[in-house]
Length: 377
Image (cartoon, rainbow, N blue to C red; front, side):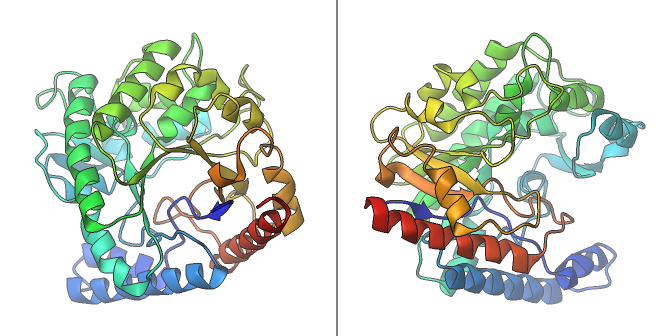
């Protein structure tokens, strides 16, 4: 199908669920009560996605504390710690570098053990819809930067690379579990790779932050890119029979010498990634020209084109979205173009975004897809 519509992953959690999650940690809400609220939120999100007319849906990540740190709740070997425990000046470091991170961090402190990461979420959600599901998983390179600390992690894994490869091997097992369960689309989230668009001889702002918080060292642009690609391929090695995607964010920094350049900076290494689709962000100024990238795609590779912003509350018109899609038409076939928001609407539990605005944006996006199909399909 041409111009398939989907989402990146997360949706805002209801206030009742957020407050009850806090109370649960204090013993004021039972697990049964919390589970009931999670089910209610998941059912509501899926109903809204179907009403919006999306072709491929998610469970909204309603069961996750954040898109990445939830691994600490699922996989033995992690310890969830406050950012101030990693560095007493943690909050000041974030402020100084103009970086937003969730305050609770999943840090590896022991050898990892295999465990279900997301299949249980899919099994709980699929009863609410017959539509194809996308399930998201945090990438090995991302988790390496987010979770390996020079003091807390070194006894379990001497280097961040050792840890990343161990996690990649576990992630592959989960990818296979999800495939066997009938998931239509497995998306591996790799924002740390996307942030590398701002790096060069010097690290980007996120790696500067992780250097101060965790003690990890920047390896250099090409070395970081090579490591990220190798880890992705380790996690998907030999996997077939399910659509695989890689989501990379793009938060352009006007202070970066690479402002206005996009993911084409990763060529040709990026195209070695064993994936069916790259899910990319293109609504912000400074993200570059998507046509430059897709012209280099091998036959069959798809783009999940970010066409609505998750950074503002303005609902784009279908006509505006159509104009954004037309940037790549002529460089890649319509059947290889998917439409999605730039990112998740609420990648962390405490990230607020009006639910009505989110779904108004999605309805506009599906109307744009209908317009494009009439014109091109």
